[in-house]
Image 1 (tube, helix red, strand yellow):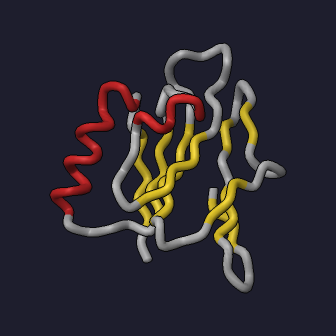
Image 2: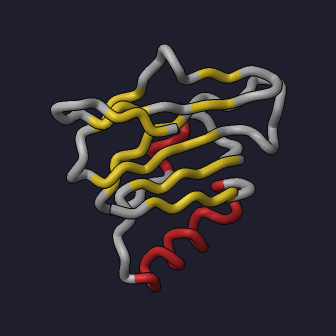
Length: 108
């Protein structure tokens, strides 16, 4: 199992470069975390990564840049968003998922 975190600085401008880099690595990460996507959950289907389920937190309503977080979880892992822990405020944006197995694990 492996994880990748990337401050993408905007899906609209940098998502294609991210997917090209992932293709070149020839390594499938279990989890990919993105910060500063600048898109909300309503636009998440525009940014698929083959072999992953995506989870997007809504971006802060008063920001157009420097907001939005997402997790891409391998489609071989069952995951659900933990809404008790996920939040958006002017100072903090979090997205937690629970990985479903005998003893749930929280990832943020």
